Length: 120
Image (cartoon, rainbow, N blue to C red; front, side, top):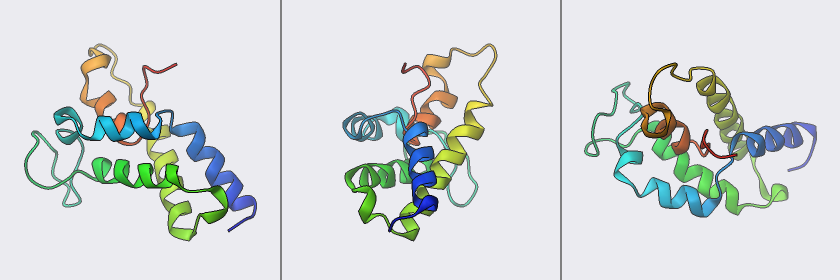
């Protein structure tokens, strides 16, 4: 699938996702990754058990997207890329003022979506 919509979604996704496929895959295997976010039912994750959070599920999708060539992207891929870019952009604006960012639920949630705010 080619075109300016594809180019725009791809560029926004690449800008938002600053973790490598390997970094993200390793992160998603941690207890911290599984303990944050919201479930599809709207419940806040407070531990590692129960239903997978939407961010954790998205992280698994991001790993798959990072495996794809731009020319192999389909409409569902582009929707997910736009969703990821939108989430990261919105969530970055909610940076906690006084919290220890390195160990915050805010950072962990962003990392589930492929963006580590401490990475330069």
